[in-house]
Image 1 (cartoon, rainbow, N blue to C red):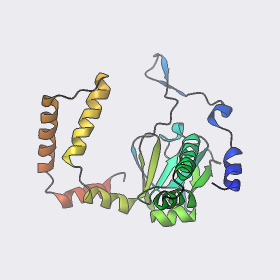
Image 2: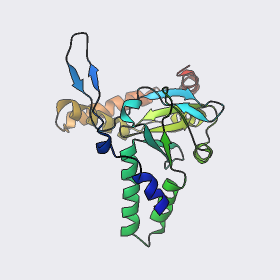
Image 3: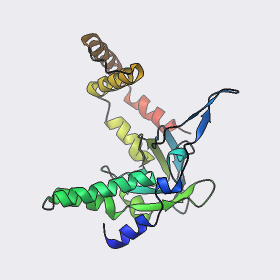
Amino acid sequence: MDAIGRDMVRSVPSLEEQEIAAPAVTLAPGAKTVALPTVPVMVGTHFHALDEKGRIIIPSKLRPALTEQFWMIRDEDDNIAIYNHQTGLDVFEYCERQMAEHPEDEAIADAVKRITSAADLVTVETSNWRVPISEMLRFHAELDKEVVTVGVLNHAVLWDRKKWEKAQEENPEESAVRKAQAGILRAAASGRRVRNERTEQHSESASENASAGDGGGSSKRSRLSQLGR
């Protein structure tokens, strides 16, 4: 990162300096409140649109995980990754470290260029969280009008809607993915890693049953086009 980039990054106060308190959520009327995680957590699939000036409104469910200055970065699929301010800085610091440790690795150097060349520090200036998307990021992500934002825990990914729908149709989840999902959910919910033969057999059976109903491709495409409308 060059000197100008460093100055821009350092001019923004860190999360600790801003002393942002974790928000609280009320579970039910009269119930006690609990603190939300202090780490950024973004989940869900959100359907929205660009306005005529190339701006979007950040979905309200993603805002608690973002500071009012956050990063938009080109990801490995040319979509737009949205990172909390501090997480974005962590990405850039990791890039610097990788280049320092592998100075002759052209693949790493080119990967860092992809990450930094279109990176944009975004400032929220309106109460409805309407923010601009840079021309370079819109170009790489092939954004048209309708967009989809998908939460992926410590970041969110902004897709052009047509590109997102095509990805859902062309990349059906493999049985190994469904199996891994089942293991994650069971282990997390039980507080321990559960890996036994019965669990694996059950996961395989569920995956095969789900795959058996994949014949209605046109029906799925029709349902995808109606999501969020």
